Length: 458
Length: 50
Image (tube, rainbow over all chains, first blue to last red; front, side, top):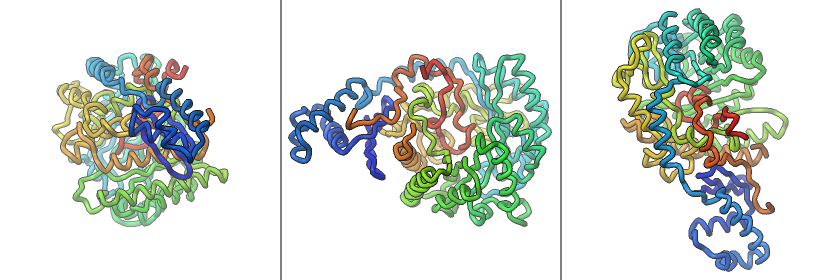
Protein backbone atom coordinates (compact mmCIF):
# COMPACT_ATOMS: atom_id res chain seq x y z
CA UNK A 1 0.00 0.00 0.00
CA UNK A 2 1.31 3.42 -0.91
CA UNK A 3 0.05 6.96 -0.68
CA UNK A 4 1.08 9.64 -3.16
CA UNK A 5 1.11 13.36 -2.47
CA UNK A 6 1.83 16.04 -5.06
CA UNK A 7 1.85 19.42 -3.38
CA UNK A 8 3.94 22.58 -3.04
CA UNK A 9 6.34 21.39 -5.73
CA UNK A 10 7.04 18.04 -4.08
CA UNK A 11 6.25 14.51 -5.19
CA UNK A 12 5.99 12.31 -2.13
CA UNK A 13 5.45 8.58 -1.96
CA UNK A 14 4.65 7.09 1.42
CA UNK A 15 5.11 3.36 1.76
CA UNK A 16 2.51 2.63 4.40
CA UNK A 17 3.62 -0.82 5.53
CA UNK A 18 7.30 -0.02 6.06
CA UNK A 19 7.06 3.61 7.18
CA UNK A 20 9.42 4.74 4.41
CA UNK A 21 8.70 8.16 2.92
CA UNK A 22 10.30 9.08 -0.38
CA UNK A 23 10.64 12.34 -2.27
CA UNK A 24 10.75 11.50 -5.95
CA UNK A 25 11.05 13.26 -9.29
CA UNK A 26 8.22 13.42 -11.82
CA UNK A 27 9.48 10.36 -13.68
CA UNK A 28 9.47 8.08 -10.64
CA UNK A 29 6.10 9.47 -9.62
CA UNK A 30 4.74 8.39 -13.03
CA UNK A 31 6.39 4.98 -12.83
CA UNK A 32 5.02 4.30 -9.36
CA UNK A 33 1.57 5.44 -10.47
CA UNK A 34 1.69 2.91 -13.32
CA UNK A 35 2.78 0.18 -10.90
CA UNK A 36 0.03 1.10 -8.50
CA UNK A 37 -2.52 0.52 -11.24
CA UNK A 38 -0.85 -2.68 -12.45
CA UNK A 39 1.50 -4.38 -10.01
CA UNK A 40 2.62 -6.83 -12.71
CA UNK A 41 3.52 -4.20 -15.28
CA UNK A 42 6.66 -5.00 -17.25
CA UNK A 43 9.60 -2.65 -17.76
CA UNK A 44 8.80 -2.62 -21.47
CA UNK A 45 5.25 -1.45 -20.81
CA UNK A 46 6.52 1.27 -18.49
CA UNK A 47 8.94 2.46 -21.19
CA UNK A 48 6.20 2.46 -23.80
CA UNK A 49 3.85 4.39 -21.55
CA UNK A 50 6.35 7.11 -20.68
CA UNK A 51 8.01 7.58 -24.08
CA UNK A 52 8.71 9.91 -25.70
CA UNK A 53 8.26 12.29 -22.76
CA UNK A 54 11.25 10.62 -21.15
CA UNK A 55 14.20 8.92 -22.85
CA UNK A 56 14.52 5.15 -22.57
CA UNK A 57 17.80 5.50 -20.65
CA UNK A 58 16.18 7.80 -18.11
CA UNK A 59 13.25 5.46 -17.65
CA UNK A 60 15.47 2.40 -17.21
CA UNK A 61 17.62 4.25 -14.66
CA UNK A 62 14.58 5.36 -12.66
CA UNK A 63 13.03 1.91 -12.90
CA UNK A 64 16.16 0.39 -11.39
CA UNK A 65 15.88 2.68 -8.41
CA UNK A 66 12.21 1.81 -7.97
CA UNK A 67 12.90 -1.92 -8.27
CA UNK A 68 15.68 -1.58 -5.68
CA UNK A 69 13.27 -0.04 -3.16
CA UNK A 70 10.70 -2.73 -3.85
CA UNK A 71 13.35 -5.41 -3.28
CA UNK A 72 14.34 -3.74 0.00
CA UNK A 73 10.63 -3.74 0.98
CA UNK A 74 10.56 0.04 1.22
CA UNK A 75 8.04 0.43 -1.59
CA UNK A 76 4.85 -1.58 -2.13
CA UNK A 77 5.81 -3.54 0.97
CA UNK A 78 3.23 -6.03 2.23
CA UNK A 79 1.28 -5.76 5.47
CA UNK A 80 2.74 -8.65 7.48
CA UNK A 81 1.73 -7.44 10.93
CA UNK A 82 -1.78 -8.72 11.56
CA UNK A 83 -0.77 -11.90 13.42
CA UNK A 84 1.99 -10.08 15.30
CA UNK A 85 -0.49 -7.42 16.36
CA UNK A 86 -3.01 -9.99 17.59
CA UNK A 87 -0.39 -11.81 19.62
CA UNK A 88 1.09 -8.59 21.03
CA UNK A 89 -2.31 -7.20 21.98
CA UNK A 90 -3.38 -10.43 23.69
CA UNK A 91 -0.10 -10.56 25.62
CA UNK A 92 -0.48 -6.93 26.66
CA UNK A 93 -4.07 -7.51 27.81
CA UNK A 94 -2.96 -10.47 29.88
CA UNK A 95 -0.15 -8.46 31.54
CA UNK A 96 -2.61 -5.68 32.39
CA UNK A 97 0.15 -3.11 32.82
CA UNK A 98 -0.86 0.49 33.47
CA UNK A 99 1.80 3.15 32.98
CA UNK A 100 0.02 6.45 32.45
CA UNK A 101 -2.60 8.26 34.44
CA UNK A 102 -4.67 11.37 33.99
CA UNK A 103 -5.17 12.49 37.56
CA UNK A 104 -8.23 14.67 38.00
CA UNK A 105 -7.21 16.50 41.13
CA UNK A 106 -10.06 18.99 40.76
CA UNK A 107 -13.52 18.51 39.35
CA UNK A 108 -14.10 22.18 39.61
CA UNK A 109 -13.11 25.07 37.41
CA UNK A 110 -12.77 28.83 37.42
CA UNK A 111 -13.70 29.21 33.77
CA UNK A 112 -16.96 28.28 32.05
CA UNK A 113 -15.70 26.99 28.72
CA UNK A 114 -18.65 26.24 26.47
CA UNK A 115 -17.11 23.16 24.87
CA UNK A 116 -15.69 21.57 28.02
CA UNK A 117 -16.10 17.80 27.87
CA UNK A 118 -15.78 17.93 31.63
CA UNK A 119 -19.06 19.86 31.88
CA UNK A 120 -17.33 22.97 33.29
CA UNK A 121 -15.20 20.78 35.47
CA UNK A 122 -17.84 18.55 37.01
CA UNK A 123 -17.71 15.57 34.63
CA UNK A 124 -21.39 14.69 35.00
CA UNK A 125 -20.97 14.54 38.78
CA UNK A 126 -20.49 16.78 41.78
CA UNK A 127 -17.84 19.41 42.09
CA UNK A 128 -14.97 18.18 44.19
CA UNK A 129 -11.27 18.24 44.93
CA UNK A 130 -9.09 15.17 45.31
CA UNK A 131 -7.65 14.71 48.79
CA UNK A 132 -4.03 13.72 49.28
CA UNK A 133 -4.83 10.20 50.46
CA UNK A 134 -6.81 9.45 47.30
CA UNK A 135 -4.04 10.92 45.13
CA UNK A 136 -1.46 8.85 46.99
CA UNK A 137 -3.58 5.73 46.49
CA UNK A 138 -3.73 6.58 42.78
CA UNK A 139 0.06 6.83 42.50
CA UNK A 140 0.43 3.59 44.49
CA UNK A 141 -2.10 1.93 42.17
CA UNK A 142 -0.13 3.13 39.15
CA UNK A 143 3.18 1.88 40.53
CA UNK A 144 1.64 -1.44 41.59
CA UNK A 145 0.18 -2.01 38.15
CA UNK A 146 3.21 -0.82 36.17
CA UNK A 147 5.12 -4.11 36.17
CA UNK A 148 8.56 -3.64 34.70
CA UNK A 149 7.81 -0.22 33.17
CA UNK A 150 10.17 2.43 34.45
CA UNK A 151 8.68 5.56 32.89
CA UNK A 152 5.34 6.46 34.43
CA UNK A 153 3.31 9.46 33.33
CA UNK A 154 0.96 11.47 35.45
CA UNK A 155 -0.95 14.44 34.09
CA UNK A 156 -2.48 16.71 36.72
CA UNK A 157 -5.76 17.55 35.10
CA UNK A 158 -9.18 18.86 35.91
CA UNK A 159 -11.35 20.80 35.92
CA UNK A 160 -8.59 23.13 36.87
CA UNK A 161 -5.76 21.45 38.83
CA UNK A 162 -4.29 24.67 40.22
CA UNK A 163 -7.46 24.96 42.35
CA UNK A 164 -5.98 22.06 44.33
CA UNK A 165 -2.30 22.82 43.98
CA UNK A 166 -1.24 21.96 47.52
CA UNK A 167 -2.30 18.38 46.83
CA UNK A 168 -0.44 18.47 43.50
CA UNK A 169 2.75 19.50 45.32
CA UNK A 170 2.37 16.82 47.96
CA UNK A 171 1.72 14.16 45.32
CA UNK A 172 4.78 15.17 43.32
CA UNK A 173 6.84 14.98 46.47
CA UNK A 174 5.41 11.54 47.26
CA UNK A 175 6.11 10.38 43.71
CA UNK A 176 9.71 11.59 43.83
CA UNK A 177 10.23 9.76 47.10
CA UNK A 178 8.73 6.54 45.79
CA UNK A 179 10.53 6.52 42.43
CA UNK A 180 13.82 6.04 44.21
CA UNK A 181 12.47 3.19 46.31
CA UNK A 182 10.65 1.44 43.48
CA UNK A 183 12.95 2.17 40.54
CA UNK A 184 10.37 4.22 38.68
CA UNK A 185 10.60 7.53 36.92
CA UNK A 186 7.60 9.84 37.11
CA UNK A 187 6.97 12.28 34.31
CA UNK A 188 4.57 14.88 35.54
CA UNK A 189 2.51 17.21 33.39
CA UNK A 190 0.23 20.06 34.43
CA UNK A 191 -2.64 21.13 32.21
CA UNK A 192 -3.94 24.52 33.28
CA UNK A 193 -6.20 27.35 32.14
CA UNK A 194 -3.75 29.78 33.74
CA UNK A 195 -6.19 31.81 35.83
CA UNK A 196 -4.42 30.96 39.08
CA UNK A 197 -0.95 30.55 37.61
CA UNK A 198 1.55 32.53 39.67
CA UNK A 199 5.30 32.61 40.30
CA UNK A 200 5.11 30.06 43.08
CA UNK A 201 3.22 27.55 40.94
CA UNK A 202 5.43 28.24 37.93
CA UNK A 203 8.64 27.73 39.91
CA UNK A 204 7.34 24.43 41.20
CA UNK A 205 6.20 23.29 37.75
CA UNK A 206 9.52 24.25 36.18
CA UNK A 207 11.42 22.32 38.82
CA UNK A 208 9.26 19.22 38.73
CA UNK A 209 7.25 18.84 35.58
CA UNK A 210 8.49 17.68 32.21
CA UNK A 211 5.58 19.21 30.36
CA UNK A 212 3.21 22.12 30.86
CA UNK A 213 0.03 22.49 28.83
CA UNK A 214 -1.43 26.00 28.77
CA UNK A 215 -4.99 26.30 27.51
CA UNK A 216 -5.74 29.23 25.19
CA UNK A 217 -7.65 29.24 21.91
CA UNK A 218 -5.93 32.03 20.00
CA UNK A 219 -7.28 35.48 19.12
CA UNK A 220 -8.87 37.35 21.99
CA UNK A 221 -12.40 37.32 20.61
CA UNK A 222 -12.13 33.62 19.74
CA UNK A 223 -10.72 32.68 23.13
CA UNK A 224 -13.15 34.74 25.19
CA UNK A 225 -16.21 33.55 23.28
CA UNK A 226 -15.63 29.92 24.24
CA UNK A 227 -13.57 30.44 27.41
CA UNK A 228 -15.46 33.03 29.48
CA UNK A 229 -14.64 33.67 33.11
CA UNK A 230 -16.81 31.91 35.71
CA UNK A 231 -18.65 35.10 36.62
CA UNK A 232 -18.85 36.31 33.04
CA UNK A 233 -16.84 39.43 33.85
CA UNK A 234 -13.55 40.38 32.28
CA UNK A 235 -11.51 38.61 29.64
CA UNK A 236 -9.78 35.31 30.36
CA UNK A 237 -7.42 36.13 27.46
CA UNK A 238 -6.25 39.30 29.21
CA UNK A 239 -5.64 37.40 32.43
CA UNK A 240 -3.73 34.47 30.98
CA UNK A 241 -1.63 35.82 28.10
CA UNK A 242 1.00 37.61 30.22
CA UNK A 243 1.25 34.61 32.53
CA UNK A 244 1.59 32.16 29.66
CA UNK A 245 4.27 34.26 27.99
CA UNK A 246 6.21 34.32 31.21
CA UNK A 247 5.79 30.55 31.57
CA UNK A 248 6.99 29.89 28.01
CA UNK A 249 10.01 32.11 28.50
CA UNK A 250 10.84 30.57 31.86
CA UNK A 251 10.90 27.14 30.19
CA UNK A 252 13.18 28.40 27.42
CA UNK A 253 10.40 27.90 24.88
CA UNK A 254 10.54 24.13 25.26
CA UNK A 255 8.64 21.41 27.13
CA UNK A 256 5.36 23.25 27.07
CA UNK A 257 2.45 23.80 24.70
CA UNK A 258 -0.08 26.52 24.37
CA UNK A 259 -3.03 24.36 23.53
CA UNK A 260 -6.21 25.60 21.91
CA UNK A 261 -9.45 24.20 20.61
CA UNK A 262 -11.00 25.34 17.36
CA UNK A 263 -14.72 25.00 16.65
CA UNK A 264 -17.28 25.68 13.95
CA UNK A 265 -17.09 29.32 15.07
CA UNK A 266 -13.46 29.73 14.01
CA UNK A 267 -12.93 27.56 10.99
CA UNK A 268 -10.25 30.11 10.06
CA UNK A 269 -8.19 28.73 12.94
CA UNK A 270 -4.85 29.17 11.15
CA UNK A 271 -5.18 32.81 12.21
CA UNK A 272 -5.36 31.66 15.82
CA UNK A 273 -2.25 29.54 15.51
CA UNK A 274 -0.39 32.41 13.90
CA UNK A 275 -1.73 34.83 16.49
CA UNK A 276 -0.29 32.64 19.24
CA UNK A 277 3.02 32.65 17.41
CA UNK A 278 2.88 36.43 16.98
CA UNK A 279 2.33 36.75 20.72
CA UNK A 280 5.63 34.97 21.27
CA UNK A 281 4.80 31.29 21.65
CA UNK A 282 6.80 28.67 19.78
CA UNK A 283 5.17 25.39 20.90
CA UNK A 284 1.60 25.42 19.72
CA UNK A 285 -1.20 22.88 19.56
CA UNK A 286 -4.63 23.86 18.29
CA UNK A 287 -7.10 21.06 17.79
CA UNK A 288 -10.66 20.47 16.60
CA UNK A 289 -13.38 20.47 19.25
CA UNK A 290 -14.89 17.13 20.15
CA UNK A 291 -18.49 17.39 21.29
CA UNK A 292 -22.05 16.35 20.67
CA UNK A 293 -22.67 16.89 16.93
CA UNK A 294 -25.85 18.81 17.75
CA UNK A 295 -23.94 21.61 19.51
CA UNK A 296 -23.87 24.82 17.43
CA UNK A 297 -20.08 25.00 17.70
CA UNK A 298 -19.55 21.35 16.62
CA UNK A 299 -17.38 20.78 13.56
CA UNK A 300 -19.60 19.74 10.67
CA UNK A 301 -18.69 17.55 7.71
CA UNK A 302 -19.27 20.63 5.56
CA UNK A 303 -16.40 22.34 7.43
CA UNK A 304 -13.81 19.77 6.41
CA UNK A 305 -12.70 21.41 3.13
CA UNK A 306 -12.29 24.80 4.78
CA UNK A 307 -10.36 23.27 7.68
CA UNK A 308 -8.07 21.40 5.30
CA UNK A 309 -7.29 24.70 3.55
CA UNK A 310 -6.35 26.12 6.95
CA UNK A 311 -3.81 23.36 7.45
CA UNK A 312 -2.39 24.20 4.00
CA UNK A 313 -2.13 27.85 5.01
CA UNK A 314 -0.32 26.80 8.16
CA UNK A 315 2.22 24.79 6.19
CA UNK A 316 2.98 27.83 4.01
CA UNK A 317 3.28 30.12 7.01
CA UNK A 318 5.43 27.70 9.02
CA UNK A 319 7.79 27.36 6.07
CA UNK A 320 8.03 31.16 5.84
CA UNK A 321 8.69 31.51 9.57
CA UNK A 322 11.28 28.75 9.67
CA UNK A 323 13.07 29.92 6.53
CA UNK A 324 13.29 33.45 7.84
CA UNK A 325 15.08 32.25 10.97
CA UNK A 326 12.09 32.08 13.29
CA UNK A 327 10.74 29.01 15.00
CA UNK A 328 7.32 27.49 15.42
CA UNK A 329 6.39 23.94 16.27
CA UNK A 330 2.81 22.93 15.52
CA UNK A 331 2.02 19.83 17.53
CA UNK A 332 -0.14 18.12 14.94
CA UNK A 333 2.56 18.45 12.30
CA UNK A 334 5.18 16.80 14.47
CA UNK A 335 6.41 13.65 12.84
CA UNK A 336 9.50 11.59 13.51
CA UNK A 337 9.84 9.61 10.31
CA UNK A 338 12.88 7.58 11.30
CA UNK A 339 12.69 7.46 15.09
CA UNK A 340 8.99 7.34 15.82
CA UNK A 341 7.10 4.61 17.61
CA UNK A 342 7.59 0.93 16.83
CA UNK A 343 4.95 -1.05 14.98
CA UNK A 344 3.51 -2.47 18.22
CA UNK A 345 2.64 1.02 19.41
CA UNK A 346 1.33 2.10 16.02
CA UNK A 347 -1.08 -0.80 15.90
CA UNK A 348 -2.44 -0.35 19.38
CA UNK A 349 -2.82 3.40 19.71
CA UNK A 350 -3.14 5.57 22.80
CA UNK A 351 -3.70 2.74 25.29
CA UNK A 352 -6.87 4.19 26.81
CA UNK A 353 -8.53 1.74 29.15
CA UNK A 354 -5.48 -0.49 29.16
CA UNK A 355 -2.11 1.14 29.87
CA UNK A 356 -3.66 4.60 30.31
CA UNK A 357 -6.48 5.47 32.71
CA UNK A 358 -8.07 8.52 34.28
CA UNK A 359 -8.77 8.86 38.00
CA UNK A 360 -11.42 11.19 39.40
CA UNK A 361 -11.27 13.10 42.72
CA UNK A 362 -12.90 10.24 44.63
CA UNK A 363 -10.52 7.68 43.11
CA UNK A 364 -12.82 6.23 40.45
CA UNK A 365 -11.01 4.81 37.46
CA UNK A 366 -12.14 5.42 33.89
CA UNK A 367 -10.55 4.42 30.55
CA UNK A 368 -9.48 8.02 29.90
CA UNK A 369 -10.34 11.61 30.80
CA UNK A 370 -12.99 11.78 28.08
CA UNK A 371 -14.99 8.96 29.68
CA UNK A 372 -14.73 10.30 33.25
CA UNK A 373 -18.15 10.36 34.91
CA UNK A 374 -19.81 8.05 32.37
CA UNK A 375 -20.90 5.31 34.73
CA UNK A 376 -21.00 2.55 32.14
CA UNK A 377 -17.23 3.04 31.83
CA UNK A 378 -16.45 3.03 35.57
CA UNK A 379 -13.69 0.43 35.89
CA UNK A 380 -13.05 0.48 39.63
CA UNK A 381 -11.45 2.64 42.30
CA UNK A 382 -7.80 3.14 43.20
CA UNK A 383 -8.58 2.22 46.82
CA UNK A 384 -10.41 -1.00 46.07
CA UNK A 385 -8.98 -2.01 42.71
CA UNK A 386 -10.40 -2.85 39.31
CA UNK A 387 -13.78 -4.53 39.40
CA UNK A 388 -14.72 -4.31 35.73
CA UNK A 389 -11.95 -6.17 33.86
CA UNK A 390 -14.38 -6.55 30.96
CA UNK A 391 -14.01 -2.82 30.20
CA UNK A 392 -10.22 -3.09 29.92
CA UNK A 393 -10.71 -6.15 27.75
CA UNK A 394 -13.01 -4.28 25.38
CA UNK A 395 -10.53 -1.43 25.10
CA UNK A 396 -7.64 -3.81 24.56
CA UNK A 397 -9.40 -5.02 21.42
CA UNK A 398 -9.31 -1.57 19.78
CA UNK A 399 -6.59 -1.56 17.18
CA UNK A 400 -5.87 -0.80 13.56
CA UNK A 401 -6.95 -4.29 12.45
CA UNK A 402 -10.20 -4.32 14.37
CA UNK A 403 -11.58 -1.21 12.65
CA UNK A 404 -12.95 -1.69 9.16
CA UNK A 405 -12.37 1.94 8.19
CA UNK A 406 -8.65 1.68 8.95
CA UNK A 407 -7.98 -1.21 6.60
CA UNK A 408 -7.28 0.87 3.51
CA UNK A 409 -6.38 4.16 5.20
CA UNK A 410 -2.88 5.52 4.60
CA UNK A 411 -2.84 7.18 8.03
CA UNK A 412 -3.50 4.00 10.00
CA UNK A 413 0.02 3.60 11.39
CA UNK A 414 0.15 7.29 12.41
CA UNK A 415 -3.16 7.71 14.25
CA UNK A 416 -3.30 4.02 15.18
CA UNK A 417 -7.03 3.72 14.76
CA UNK A 418 -7.85 7.07 16.31
CA UNK A 419 -9.38 8.11 19.58
CA UNK A 420 -11.73 5.59 21.23
CA UNK A 421 -13.65 8.37 22.97
CA UNK A 422 -14.23 10.26 19.74
CA UNK A 423 -15.39 7.04 18.10
CA UNK A 424 -17.74 6.26 20.97
CA UNK A 425 -19.21 9.73 21.22
CA UNK A 426 -19.85 9.95 17.49
CA UNK A 427 -21.00 6.38 16.78
CA UNK A 428 -21.69 4.66 20.12
CA UNK A 429 -18.88 2.15 19.51
CA UNK A 430 -15.32 2.47 20.82
CA UNK A 431 -14.17 0.17 18.05
CA UNK A 432 -15.45 2.45 15.33
CA UNK A 433 -14.00 5.66 13.87
CA UNK A 434 -14.90 9.34 14.01
CA UNK A 435 -15.13 10.29 10.36
CA UNK A 436 -14.50 14.04 10.68
CA UNK A 437 -11.48 13.34 12.86
CA UNK A 438 -10.19 10.84 10.30
CA UNK A 439 -10.46 13.34 7.44
CA UNK A 440 -8.55 15.97 9.43
CA UNK A 441 -5.97 13.45 10.59
CA UNK A 442 -5.23 12.42 7.01
CA UNK A 443 -4.82 16.06 5.99
CA UNK A 444 -2.51 16.81 8.92
CA UNK A 445 -0.35 13.82 8.07
CA UNK A 446 0.02 14.95 4.47
CA UNK A 447 0.90 18.44 5.67
CA UNK A 448 3.44 17.09 8.14
CA UNK A 449 5.20 15.11 5.42
CA UNK A 450 5.24 18.06 3.03
CA UNK A 451 6.67 20.21 5.80
CA UNK A 452 9.46 17.69 6.37
CA UNK A 453 10.28 17.79 2.68
CA UNK A 454 10.15 21.57 2.48
CA UNK A 455 12.30 22.14 5.55
CA UNK A 456 14.71 19.38 4.61
CA UNK A 457 14.65 17.74 8.02
CA UNK A 458 13.57 14.30 9.03
CA UNK B 1 19.86 7.47 -5.84
CA UNK B 2 19.36 10.07 -8.52
CA UNK B 3 15.58 10.07 -8.81
CA UNK B 4 14.57 9.17 -5.25
CA UNK B 5 15.46 10.68 -1.93
CA UNK B 6 14.22 8.83 1.14
CA UNK B 7 13.04 11.39 3.64
CA UNK B 8 12.77 8.94 6.51
CA UNK B 9 12.21 5.29 7.16
CA UNK B 10 11.04 3.84 10.45
CA UNK B 11 11.24 0.31 9.01
CA UNK B 12 8.34 -1.24 10.91
CA UNK B 13 9.40 -4.79 10.12
CA UNK B 14 12.74 -4.20 11.80
CA UNK B 15 10.96 -2.64 14.79
CA UNK B 16 9.21 -5.95 15.50
CA UNK B 17 12.45 -7.33 16.88
CA UNK B 18 12.71 -5.05 19.91
CA UNK B 19 9.32 -3.32 19.78
CA UNK B 20 6.56 -3.05 22.33
CA UNK B 21 8.64 -2.16 25.38
CA UNK B 22 5.99 0.40 26.38
CA UNK B 23 8.40 3.00 27.73
CA UNK B 24 7.38 5.69 25.24
CA UNK B 25 5.04 8.52 26.04
CA UNK B 26 1.30 8.01 25.98
CA UNK B 27 0.04 10.24 23.20
CA UNK B 28 -2.69 11.92 25.22
CA UNK B 29 -0.18 12.96 27.88
CA UNK B 30 1.64 15.26 25.48
CA UNK B 31 -0.73 17.98 24.38
CA UNK B 32 -3.70 16.59 22.62
CA UNK B 33 -6.35 15.13 24.94
CA UNK B 34 -8.88 15.02 22.13
CA UNK B 35 -7.26 13.06 19.33
CA UNK B 36 -4.83 10.22 18.85
CA UNK B 37 -1.35 11.34 17.89
CA UNK B 38 0.75 8.22 18.16
CA UNK B 39 2.74 9.02 15.03
CA UNK B 40 4.35 12.08 16.54
CA UNK B 41 5.67 10.39 19.66
CA UNK B 42 9.28 9.30 19.91
CA UNK B 43 10.67 5.86 20.52
CA UNK B 44 12.53 5.54 23.81
CA UNK B 45 14.00 2.11 23.28
CA UNK B 46 17.68 2.41 22.47
CA UNK B 47 17.70 -1.06 20.94
CA UNK B 48 15.20 0.20 18.40
CA UNK B 49 17.37 2.92 17.03
CA UNK B 50 20.55 0.88 16.69
